[in-house]
Amino acid sequence: MRANPADYELKSPGTLNGVLSLLAEAPGQWTPIAGGTEIMVQFGTGRMTQRQFVNIFGLPELTAISITPESIRIGAGVTYTAIRNHAEIGEALPLLAKAASWTGSLANQNRGTLGGNIVNGSPAADSPPALLVYEATVDLISVRGTRSIPYAGFHTGYKKSALAPDELVLAITILRPAAGLRQYLRKVGTRNAMAISKVALAGVATLDGETLRNPRVAIASVYHSPYRCLKTEALLADATVSPKLIAEARAALIAEIAPLDDIRSTARYRTQVSANLLEEFLLSLRSNAEESAS
Ligand SMILES: Cc1cc2nc3c(=O)[nH]c(=O)nc-3n(C[C@H](O)[C@H](O)[C@H](O)COP(=O)(O)OP(=O)(O)OC[C@H]3O[C@@H](n4cnc5c(N)ncnc54)[C@H](O)[C@@H]3O)c2cc1C
Image 1 (cartoon, rainbow, N blue to C red):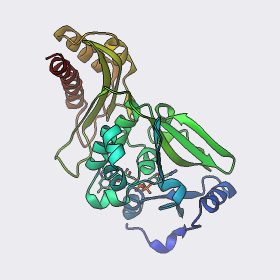
Image 2 (image 1 turned 60 degrees about the vertical axis):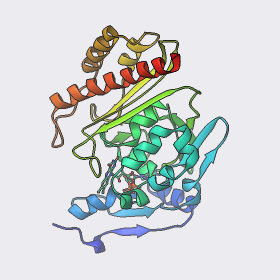
Image 3 (image 1 turned 30 degrees about the vertical axis):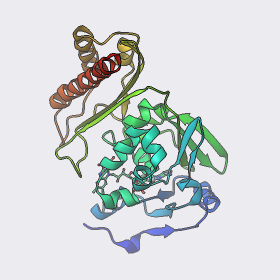
């Protein structure tokens, strides 16, 4: 049965302090709504249990993008359109800009926010693999103050997070990648546009001659939440890309992940594609090394 709007309440305090006070009065009672692109889908099904919503879309503290020589801080309420149109984000964080350009339709990108993407906690979401390999930090805010946690520790289970019921995600901060960082991201879905990923893999590394330094690999849709592949990274660290390393890395990745088996794809397909994407990432590093040596 479709939802009846009269059964729901929406408040729009219009200020960050007003929103935080409301959340603090009765933690868990009021659900923040940013772009609403996740919430309105649930609303449409009539199965949503929350009844009270507080509007946070467009709050200035949540829509700011701050650039310093060291870092880029993106407000949780920044939309995908703002991310993909931001020249410095495109230059310094191409994986995040690419993920923003893949998310849903242009209409989704005009409303959907980075904060909404991570709080929603879908294992298949597009921004998280990039945020994981960039080792992003998440700033949380409540009337009690602010705290920062690594994004890698944000998801604590399927659709569960470290966010307290009276907290908002305020911003996501990423240190500017070192010069020469090789960056890779590929999403495999049913179509090229308007498709949730079956698998998406992000990888970064620097090359010291032909030796991989600080490799980081993260994947969507292979765990209860977006997943950073620490065991595979350990195998790759300080190694040289070779057919032997690629074979070992594929095996390590397959041993490390537990792909989902759901309506979008099978675990078997996701396992194979994850290993193929990892191989593609590693081969791209080798071809880059050959280009820079020639
Ligand atoms: C047609 C369609 C296609 C889509 N395609 C994609 C896709 O390709 N890839 C993809 O990753 N996603 C996709 N999505 C999902 C969605 O657009 C994104 O997850 C989007 O980023 C959600 O942001 P939002 O601001 O709209 O979140 P909302 O719907 O407003 O909120 C989502 C959740 O986050 C919470 N929340 C939001 N902001 C905050 C905050 N600052 N602090 C605390 N809690 C907060 C809300 O309470 C809610 O629980 C699609 C959605 C639709 C409808």
